[in-house]
Image (cartoon, rainbow, N blue to C red; front, side):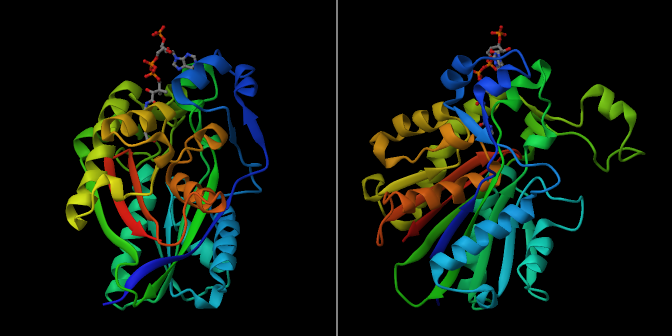
Length: 332
Ligand code: UT7
């Protein structure tokens, strides 16, 4: 049975930098509050109408293919994780495939929010292990900025999120013990309404109405403290589950690459697991929370910075809306 190894990683973030001071001009917030409560200094926002989840995904995918020494024609299947597709349907994966000239190649959108990339890697791994596909492009791309309530009313959510995309090329290898070693995927819909976007949706008699706009139900809602409390429990649980499944110990892990939700969550996870801070990657200060894009962006930068080397054991882990959570353990 082949294993699925990471052959290349790439990222794309918009050029437009929005600092905490920029947000101070839009709402009642402060650079000090945002830094202290989230660790974020700045984030990237798209040029609306010019950049989308798929266009950013295409740029990230081209970088990943280049790093892998491959080209578009090597891709057998596309998996795209996003909660911010261009259209209600079809998904961003179809648009990305078209832009890359992969017409006819299967494309699957994953909507498990902040856990999207962890789910996507696991699904790609199963397709490769089963022999159905040899090389899969896995992309996470998000445009959050245009969906935020950038007024004081929406400040708890608006200051956190950013835009961007990351991609990986997963390919079959016969090397034992290389690539994705294990994944765990979880969800509990009991908590669906603790972090969600209520409208537009298919529940009522109308998809879109003026009331939805007037009542602000078109904006993401988050019960921040509640989400925080669950996150700091679920991150370590999912990491420990990968170790129990493989027999490794936490000391064997070279780098944990968590979804970048909040610097304080990452620090709490590091303390709970009792691992050195240099073993937990963080770049939230530059990009904020980019949902399904945060892990592939972080993996790309960890490789660029030499924080991940060939042979390293890396744990990717996420928690988010759903609630959903999970982890992958990867031998690079
Ligand atoms: O991606 C995965 C899912 N998301 C997460 O994991 C995020 C989880 N939650 C969080 O990161 C944090 O809960 C937040 C960053 C969202 C909020 O931090 P907090 O320390 O939990 O603050 P809080 O919501 O308890 O609010 C504390 C105070 C409140 O004022 P009062 O009631 O104490 O007067 C808020 O109104 O801070 C106020 N506040 C703000 N002040 C300035 C909330 N947002 C802001 C803001 N600027 N942007």
